Length: 314
Image (cartoon, rainbow, N blue to C red; front, side, top):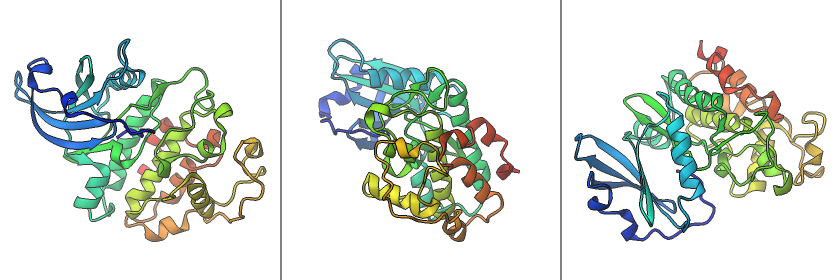
């Protein structure tokens, strides 16, 4: 589910009974609940299909909230086999409802409950499907801005990207637009530039999604979150401990970022050795694809298009 900065109340009345959902969607049971609202399994009484319905409170007095409109429009535009399909959209005075294809579980649940923590086989085709979904969105000019295992859904061995509540369309060059808010992407999957820029000068592009994909791949291999910090500085230090502390020589311009300190502790680059040691999937190509996705300099990160044909998948 999308990162929500401030929890909001979600009154039960906003969960719209059957007659408020165009007399079409019959509630079965809740799948997930959070500060955004909840996702429920419902039956389409017209077609008989079982679908997922994401319901959110609508507070805007002058129409749809920007977040609801953005999520609906972007996810609808991204018609791809590896993006969860939007089937219907219902706007009520106090709530909005996204009707989507129903999947079995998210990637985190799949790894935890089905795989015993991590992939030992079929990693490459699984990750390639995730990359393909992201690459398609990038080709249309979007950034997802909240890629994480909970926002990758799984069904019958196929993987689809979902939850575009924080996504946005880029204007101009994809590597450094803005300024945008840095308060995007769940902390453990957040690219370092998002934590080093101050709010007034935060410019970024699709490279933040590529960093998140690197974090997801490492987690798929090892069953462990790559950078499980409990704060931004804690997460940054975990990144530095794995990749080495960035300096101007290795990341030109880093010294001008508002939250960068020359007094940061000094760590050496491990070249992903801890990830390789814990991987249950073998090492072939893994180190190189992680290097290519997780460069400090965003412009040096592999694009999603290039990732689709990366040697890792051969």
